Amino acid sequence: MGFIGLLIFIGLDEIRVVFFPVTLCLIGAFCYAYSNNVLFKLNHINSSALASATMLSGFVFSIPLFLSEPQSFSFDLSLKTYLATLFLGLVSTGISFIAYVVLLQRSSPVQASSIIFLVPITGIFWGAIFLNENIDQKVILGSLCILVGIGLTNIFKPKKLLRD
Image (cartoon, rainbow, N blue to C red; front, top):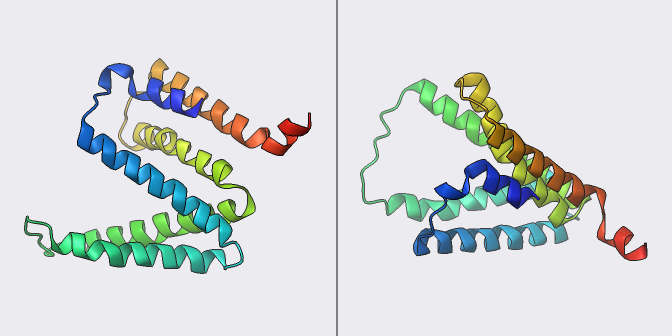
């Protein structure tokens, strides 16, 4: 249901298949699913420490990619830009990732990853509030499908379905 909601959200007319980006998305999805299972199995480690180590290793492994960028990058930015970047990295991403790892350790990888489907809904919500973006019927229908999919994933547990 969540995937159908995303298709409604985006619109089938907007979907184009280009091999290289699709391949990268599939590789990213595989890595995401794999990391969810690894994080789930490491539930004996403090969630804050686990989330911090994950984000720090992601930062370290991305440095070579940053340095290999062919276009030059200027660090001549305002203090406000640096503070906003620091806030987004530490507060927004850091705290939400710690909360995600806690959720992952207390539930299952499938249930925890279903929450990711909320990202487009919250993005549209914030866009409507701060950027005066329009919310049309397609967005509402897609959001409802996403919420139903999340609800079905979290209400019906596989063991309960097998016993009944």
